[in-house]
Length: 63
Image (tube, rainbow, N blue to C red):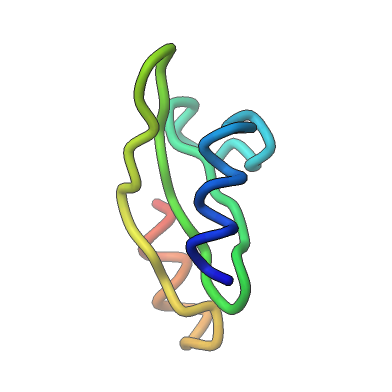
């Protein structure tokens, strides 16, 4: 299931929401936030965070 979400993300990279950094986007796949950037040829996963974690941890990751 998670791999299917990544495959879909690679086809539609603009579907994620823009974070405070305009070059980084966030997409929810199952119970995870996937942080990524992309250009015309590559999608680069920068981090995967379990969204069931403490919200303070997630906020630090997004800054």
